[in-house]
Length: 341
Image 1 (tube, rainbow, N blue to C red):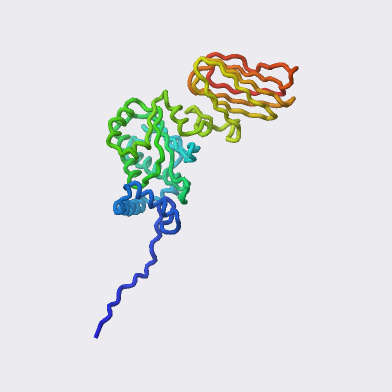
Image 2: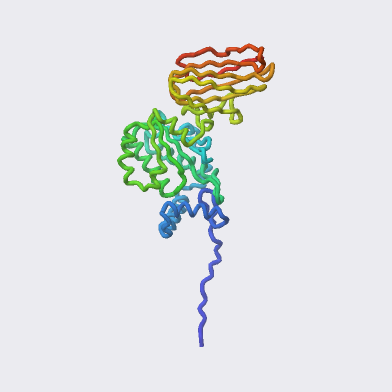
């Protein structure tokens, strides 16, 4: 006579698991999430699985879902902000080292923990704007401005930075497509040269350092001028000009003269970006095609000083050339407008 053994039946509904706003095992977005963990562990499945379990556990303990909705104030919004895209269409964030704010925020442990929570909250909100669909952009291009950095020797700052970095490595793998440090003091660059031989080539390819003199040129390698804020030599700013306006980038050799002709129609607006200049003369000729129009322009110089002349030339042969802006020596940036030409 045989006796059947009954196995216990689990009537519990499987728990829904979310990572970065993506419900796991629901659709193809799960593949993108899992692939990030696999890549970070060099496709070692066991290590990647352990990392996922630890990340899920940490997210519950840290209270990520509640943190996203928490109001931590707006004081830190000038430290990290998202804006624009790289030339490859990757959204980029700028992290500014604000000396005064850091001194205030890192003065005691409570404030340091608030900064840590705010940094994770900002990251979570930014990640949830990404596209985890197959072929979508699920990475961030990050720019860190070290101009007002407190330095890597401050113990209270180093403590928070180390904690943030470790949390990112453990729980946010493969999100940084490129990390560019601008206005980097020599100490940072020397430190990176010391540790770079210890890094994997795939990791080193994600980092770029630039001192003050090369910061703007370095940003232009990865980001177009209309996406870069004006404080870094770009044209992305609030004001009279917007993304729909024409941007012309002009490269001029040192000690040379260049004439640029821009055809003008009614209500024409131009933003002109000059780079690599060295005490030379540059003439802008606006070709007028209509009797009455308004022309607005803004010129930005990235590099050296420039002498500048703006002239309006009528398209008719019997018209007279009108000099709108005479030659300016030691000129850096200019803007102007002419009515009823």
